[in-house]
Image 1 (cartoon, one colour):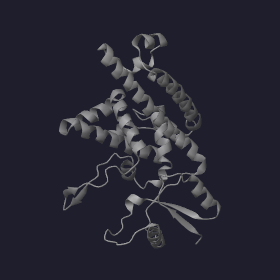
Image 2 (cartoon, helix red, strand yellow):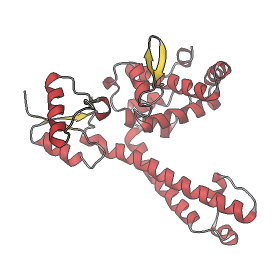
Image 3 (cartoon, helix red, strand yellow):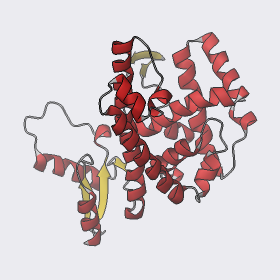
Length: 284
């Protein structure tokens, strides 16, 4: 067996380390720290003991690992996440303009109206530089989206996902990049769990005894499927009927989550079977 290395802190700048280790002939494993539980009563802990413990799990073949994206896919993947960062920044400035307008004039304007403000209106309302920042961010977001389309649109997975109600260009791009290869998920249940579309609970004798890590999974996929849920209810009669049935038996929050779960499972089967969406099968 060749030389192996485990890495358990993916939140730092680690691309250079992985690439260097792989170039040196090491087989690199990205340890899933949330799935690794050590004995809480240990008196001593540190980098050396943690490394020894990871090596022990690796030797036994039970080390929980994550996926390391190939170097050629990382740039596009990071670009999609950068777009999300720019969107959040633009939203904060839009909300600032809306609040300032409400305070000074007693009127409310929508986010779309904020984006369409010209310089004359900005001067009349005595608005700060937020509008200029919004305009700049919007132009940069448009550039990023064009580049993402150039990279992702030719892919088969992207074309398949856009056939599902509620998933357009932006959401299909995010789901493709955050999913990676669908083969790394053993079942639709595993994929839905990774996309944060399933409850986290601990059962004993059929009764709920608590909850696990509710934030475990991919937050970007979780956002994408919630957004897809909102759009699908507007553009798909079957999706809206499914939501209304669930809502009548439970409440709107659970019904929305159930619809997101349906869409996640549908995406798994579409990508696995290489077939476009069958609405009848999805919401049967």
